[in-house]
Amino acid sequence: MRGYILRRLAFALFLIVAVSSASLLLTELAPGDAALAKLGPEAHPDEIARARERYGLNRSIGAQYADWVSHAVRFDFGRSILYDRPVADLIPERAANTAILAVTALAIATLVGLPLGIVSGSRRGGLLAHAIRTVSVVLLSMPPLLTSLFLVFLAARTGWLPIAGMRSAGVPPGGALADLARHLVVPALAIALPLAAMFERLQAQAMREAIAQPFVVATLARGVSRRRVVWRDALKVAVRPVAAVYGLVVGTLLSGSFAVEVITAWPGLGRLMLDALSARDIYLVAGCAGMGSVFLACATLASDLALAAVDPRVRE
Amino acid sequence: MIRRIGIALVAVWALAAIGAPPVAPHAVDARFPGLLNAPPSRLTHAGARVAIHPWRLVNQLEQRYELDASQTIDLRWFADGRLVVSSDETRAPLLLLGTDSYGRDVFTRLLFGARTSLALALVSALGAMLVGAGAGGIAGYAGGALDDVLMRTSDLVMVLPAMYVALALRAVMPLVLPAPTVFALLASIFAIVGAPFIARGVRAIVRSERQLDYAIAAEALGASGARLLLRHLLPAARGYIAVQLTLLVPAFIVAEATLSYVGLGFPDPIASWGTMLHEASTNVRVFADFPWLLSPAAAMFLVVLGLNLALEGRRTSGLESLR
Image 1 (cartoon, one colour):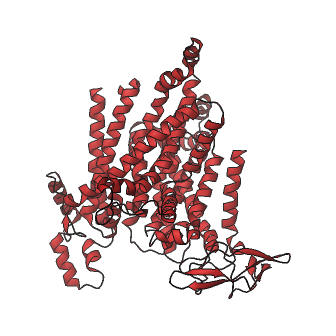
Image 2 (spheres, rainbow over the protein chains, first blue to last red):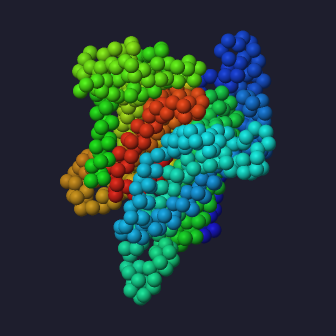
Image 3 (cartoon, rainbow over the protein chains, first blue to last red):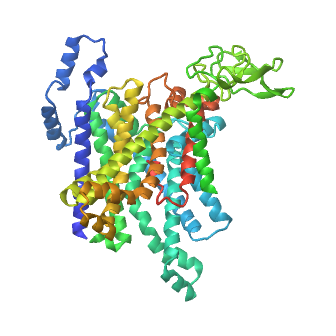
């Protein structure tokens, strides 16, 4: 077990280093640079040259990378040229916003998707199972880009919910937390609905397979109640394949949250990354990518541990 | 039955994309300057014939229109090389899905956009198939260190959020590019991001098929490695690849739309479902006032739904379609 955890930890660390380095070098190689992007194409060449020197952009790629690494290990991630602030000041707030969105969406999707999957997977037919399945197939065909457009449209038409941003200006009625919750509904649902559908389908499939196994029939034959067999015995087996995809789901979650953040103007990491990439702000890009990979690494680690907890075979 | 509905849905869109020039009532870049953000034409009948009423602008600022019921304009079928057009283009053009903020017919652009979006998704999926089947086949056939390197790399790409990988790869290229370059660029990016999903499964299939008698027999008969792989082992993965392709196509349609939505897709005059959404996206409230501008999103939903239905009962997980 310890060897397994150490191996996964090493992978997590590698992921963070590789992703932030790769994004830094990639942006570095891109045509145009931050000095040009900030001053505009009409700026005087001398002015651009001076800006390049000030930000250290005139050095070779190797030198810039070595400099960044030597600072990054001391938790100094450079200065954003676009915002003229240290990257370490910019990232945490945005990362927290993305985390709020992603965790809420994941929680909703799990709490809705898994129980429905157990219900629809454990019944051979019937109105309820059919209804759940139909809704799932429809929602699976609406990735977050579409759900967020649709929900924003609904919210704007009805005026029930705010359609953009994270906070209202001024002092909101009902306190800041209630205001945040109201703003959270549209983006969180936009991510959660397709995800819940996916969980439901996966769980239903796993449940069907689990129920077909002889031990379930044997338990039923011994007179254990149906409900108990489904929710205790079969579920223990059926939860494994679902736990196995949780690690990959986080990537899906971040991908989905990018579209949603842009459409609903949620001030998260995705929007920041987009701005940083367009402005060729190399240190900010590396910071965003690094932070995203920290999310990814933590989540894969957590899902690995969860998987090891429900499936002893993984631990070897 | 359900699968047939799915296939029919996809076929309708494929036909619409192929037949866009005669089916669409207008040219793709035709503008109606007096009809910015005009609502869809309401169909009516004049005797036995189908006709439309013109729109009259009543509020320039809010771009509100009123139906001018006093005038009826006939539709002409099979005229000017098009399926159906209005008999008086200047007074009342046929606008089945209204116009966008430039006064262009949304229905026409939807059909031409289907060409761009579907062609890109298809080409990308074929690219992903070539790269993925190639890498997976070689990894499964060769084994050893090469197998390790290829599979570790594809694991890494699969863990990363696909949208961000595509975004980063697209954004490091010049932000404004001519349309054919954008097409080639996006297709290669999507192929790279999608390939690992195919490579994983193909590798597993090739590895297990290699142990079977027919593969051993072919090898004993002197088949070369390349022949064994191409003629015998990869065909065994056909079914798997077909399912993966049906999952990748919707993902690529949505990826194009997302990149175009944030302004990294096709340049302006080119219609794609993503650029159409992008043009309307300056303010999300636009969608509430002019709902017909959301029709590219509806089109995407129908295509993805069709592909999902066509796969009903065959998919192993819905994960790929979300990425």
